Image (cartoon, rainbow, N blue to C red; front, top):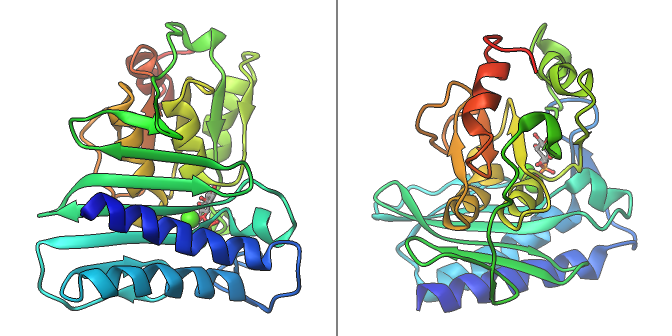
Length: 259
Ligand code: IPD
Ligand code: CA
Ligand code: CA
């Protein structure tokens, strides 16, 4: 039942993304000059919440655009209606719907759907992760220096003196290819299916990481904070890898090792 509602909600949000993609839509700004929110973000979030509320009116919800509901439920849906909004606004088909379901604070069900590439990533705790219903697994790469990495930079970076760029440099200066796709949920899923070996970012919010986090873990990967400690979707820093390069990446991020 939960799974069916999750899938229905992801498709409902994705239909709104496709309805507005490369068409006209209104745009407004959030914190940070280029941090946009579009009409499509609101439409997608509404479509997703309509599905969730129809089936589970008492569940708590946390959506990027409308905040957190005050329901007192053990279940909480964590929703990013468009992850990769700036890509979306510029017609770049790297954006997706990200939905996770928590029970008592633990994510146990997750979906990330990029309707442009028709890639539906799904995971259920303890049952593995899939891409379009086929099992996926993280890569086998055991050396960071030979890895293919991905990262992201916060729109509020303007206010922070040190962090993301310095970490980016630690890998790029050693010849490691590091991409920046512009959608943390897709970054995580592409680690889960072995396209990337690792992903790190400094300032994610729960709706960015919740679904992708479970998908990476269920695909056999490892997700922690930058110190290598247990990850929570309510903290900002994330490191998600195939597991094999994880400890080495923690050493590099914490300046205890140069590649
Ligand atoms: C953003 C994307 C991006 C990440 C930003 C997020 P949005 O989400 O996930 O990759 O670097 O930190 O805010 O705004 O497109 O939903
Ligand atoms: Ca996001
Ligand atoms: Ca978003």
